[in-house]
Length: 228
Image (cartoon, rainbow, N blue to C red; front, top):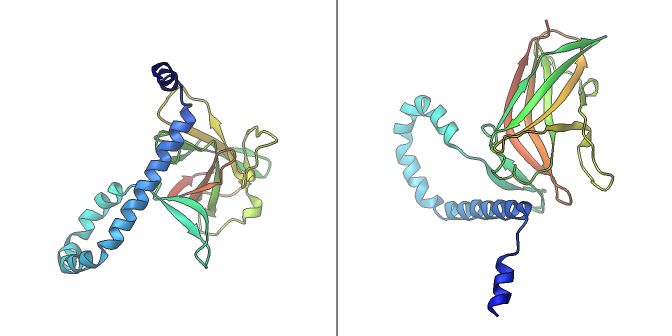
């Protein structure tokens, strides 16, 4: 019996399983906290109402501090009838850094390299996603005019196995191989018609792992690009 127990203890659990277990625990903990908060809602309402006068006087000073203290959390994506159709991760703005590189011009187009840096790859949900793509974004010119999405092309060099089904694959980003074990970097080129200074607004990414449903990663990112 002791020999059998030793054999079990020596079985090595793959890292990806450890990652998924950790993510599952975090999602369960978030759900527990939401339920606990709902039970406290009535008593908290009175306290909040009594504090409004004080908060209003200091909201300007506290706003930035409060925003930086808020952590990302998971939530269900539901249809109108309450049916859960997916999962999303909210308030990820501080988890991901988006920058642009040196632009180039090709005929009537402008090529804008963008880099998406996940600052802590061990944090959920970034530990388990295998591919990343742009989900919701828009580009505006210097006058605020919205660029037609049909005129925007995302170019990256991503090899996807034939048996790997990916939604939103036309917006895939290429992962850069790094020796750094704390972060992950993805990149792509935005190809758009030639124009003056532009702004790129990103409101969500989409992450996915093989055989898993995609997960939406919500936040607020903005890139100012000078094409002159």
